[in-house]
Length: 451
Image 1 (cartoon, rainbow, N blue to C red):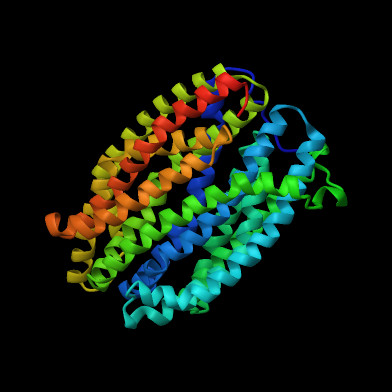
Image 2 (image 1 turned 135 degrees about the horizontal axis):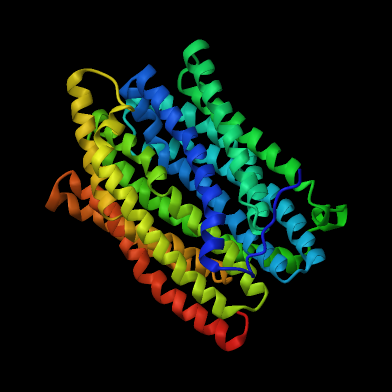
């Protein structure tokens, strides 16, 4: 059965955005199972020290992952625009060139990640008792960067064509694979934290193969050798979209690493509690990320078709549904957050109680401020979908300034809670850049017809 592609230049914008987002949300739930299952298995089977080791690698690996996602999402903007304009031969050239560039980027990221692994963990004040585990986990995950790059590119191709269902199906298959392999590698084979990393990468490979097989069934997506040739004009255009998004995610991650360095100074129990909630971070923003993907596709396709007023209408719908969604998620987390974070923790009763208090406090602060994060995702994606990836990168710089400034200054005023407040202040700093950016970009497009 061929994947369902969706033309988002026709029909009700709210219905299109929500219907496109729902499969992505479910897919993201299953993708988060990678992280959640890893965390639960490691935390429950291997204890708080192993969970802290996992957490110590979070931001460095997220930086690598964020750069991969940024590059491929940038490529996807041009794919969506060409598909919206029904320029299929040009679309094939964009996809082929994106694949060639992705191979190069994956190799660069892999080499840089391996070289930076130990120095960065040392720079982050990773406690000596967990350094060995953290380094082993990180090196294996970085080795899997080409797999992660392949999956993200293939999923981006499908989303740019309006197909949110296939990435969902891929995530379901991959999540089930990950759960089985986690239990096998950690519980049966006793490979510890290395087994958790291997399980995640094998599951990601399965999801990539699934997407590739689906793309092959789309008749107008059959590529020839010449489509993979890297021509300077096309390569430059793609990298001008992907590079700012990759840099934006890298800047955000560096701010996160500064927070991790501060967290590492509070001891293993605090790191464990912080890590438990950090793993739920992805759950909190599942819907936001999905609305963001929907907006990149929606805006990109409508931009290609020259439907500027339709972009405005879609933006109003997306902001409204995002705010409502964030409030619902926040209420659920405030009510049920305490027992949820406990599922990640094991150890002595005192360790578990201390880590739970840290985890729930962080979760509550993020939940209360969740609408700010949802506005960020929708607005940033809309601006990116219009082909402007520079202003969103500037918003990443604002996040960095607010996050690092907060983590350096706020603990003096609020104690440990200052670290948590620094995170939500970063969201607000990004919104201060992104909201004006949207109006500036849409006005420019309205005046010129296209950017």
